[in-house]
Length: 213
Image (cartoon, rainbow, N blue to C red):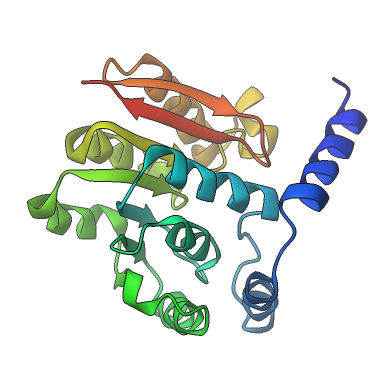
């Protein structure tokens, strides 16, 4: 498939299946107006994330990389009534903005925002393992650490999902530390004996691994 045709297909899916509603549009607008990085999931990526939560039957989800709460809203909406999302955000400003957005979306009772570095917060969650699904969209240099945590703390049949698997195409000609980190993460997930995995060609690439042992 040519790049032009691939783009047309992405736009077709977004317009037909993944139209942003008023709440998600508001979150995207506020992300820009408050000066946060404009790196939230695209609508079709958010749609896929929610579907993965539903398909896996996940009720207890951990997210690393909250930003303004866009992906967290997609996750929380897909949870059952008793479901819970714990989302981790390094920036105190981003965490504050995300909390206000979860409140605005009517999801505050389903979401706990924990402020801090992922590698420091995740060990605090192990006592309540196993979890059903983990979504990774944070500092690329620690993706391998987040994968290791997922391997130890997801239930068998649970899923690890990671954004930016294609990393803007830089995985094909890696130069920076983040480029090499994503190449290493993709290889580690592909070779991991505990996961059956692939990359879904949506947005910047969504890596998905189902824990098998």
